[in-house]
Image 1 (cartoon, rainbow, N blue to C red):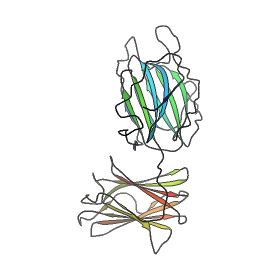
Image 2 (cartoon, rainbow, N blue to C red):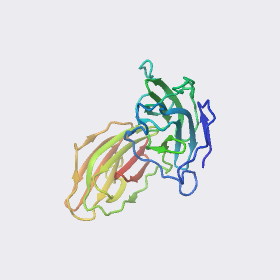
Image 3 (tube, one colour):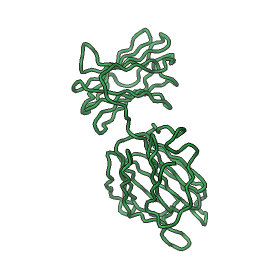
Image 4 (cartoon, helix red, strand yellow):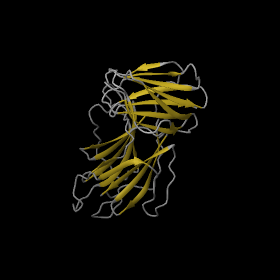
Length: 307
């Protein structure tokens, strides 16, 4: 189990017991990949005389992700975790959080003090800089009317997940480490090749520190064969080839071409062929390295283009 640093804690806490396999050894959880908002409901009703009380915040480094643990007594509150801006609960003003992206954690039905005595259980004014690979800073937006907010400052906009743990009650937020595979101009080949049809449901893009990201969302449970390389006839265009297991014509939803206009990635256009293949052409500002990741749940192909 990785070492955990206690932050903001003013109480002596009970030992934290991680999920099986949450250490940085064999059996550790894989890196999270989802960036969609995640929510959860409270484990106790709002009228409970002993509502969830936040008593500490800790961090730990795992092999594939950084973890923030919020410790509670009296059960765990409802929560919403999503990318955005940290806002002060008292004034409504945006608070700066160090990092390229901010993951906002809002607890609903939780208190930073003992409701019976009024004694504070955490210091929400402390700003912590854990210096982990992805997790750079943690600061609170304060607490008001049973809501407590935090901003996790991250080195990049990465996948995350939320785990509700027990004995003692706590909520863990995992943020993936940035990809470690190098950028290259060598041809990439991969994919299960079992999808009977190429179905591209959307194209998403985003600017990241040092690279632009192009995501092809696929409407199939498994991936077709994937080939990625710079086009011979257009040396600044990256060709992404999708080949299905059958000759069923592919389907591409949305506009064609797709304007992007980022630092490196400029646009994406598609060509659909009668033999079950689809070509995507990613135009870039100049020839540079790229890396490819094939992700599941949902199925998608990620192409990162370096600056």
